[in-house]
Amino acid sequence: METVVSRLRQLRGWFVAWFIIQSVIGTVTAIQVIDTLRAFAFFRSSLASSPRGLEVASSLFVEAVLLALGLWIFHGLLQLRSWARLTLLVVGWISALGAMTSLLSMGSLGLVRGLLPGVDLGGLAAVGLLTNSLNLLFWGYAILTLQFDREVRAVFVSVPAAA
Image 1 (spheres, one colour):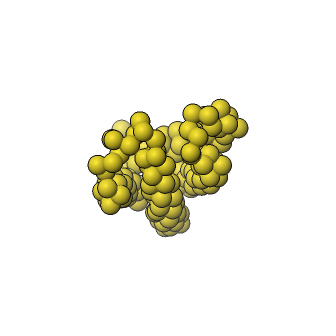
Image 2 (cartoon, rainbow, N blue to C red; image 1 turned 180 degrees about the vertical axis):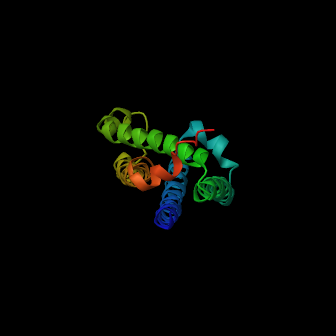
Image 3 (cartoon, rainbow, N blue to C red; image 1 turned 135 degrees about the horizontal axis):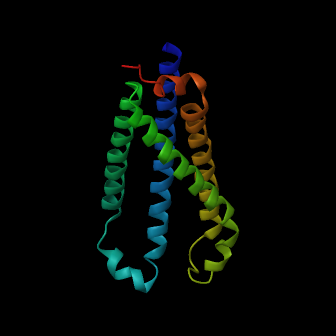
């Protein structure tokens, strides 16, 4: 049982590292895209009143709320709650399939090049490749640990005693 809890703690540590990396990359990319969109007349009026500090602060606030939610789920997981394992498996499979779909569809980025002439699609593709690869690595590890590790699964999937 102690090794299972140790593996789940390690998974939580990888989650925090993955989340922080994804948050930093996402915030920096979003700021750069918003700055690029400000050059277009269509977006200029709506984005002009939004200062960069507010964009960063709102992004960090949302990311902090999501991190707190994730840590709450991991708290349930470390208490060996089945709902937490199931929640992480559902999120994990959806995230892994989404990352795989994004990676497979990256070749079609050239189709939008004419629609957004000032946007660095090569840079966005590189960021997408990095973040989707990180998603596959983390969620693949989470799925492997929570669904396919025999010891971990045995702790959560126990046969109820006959009454």
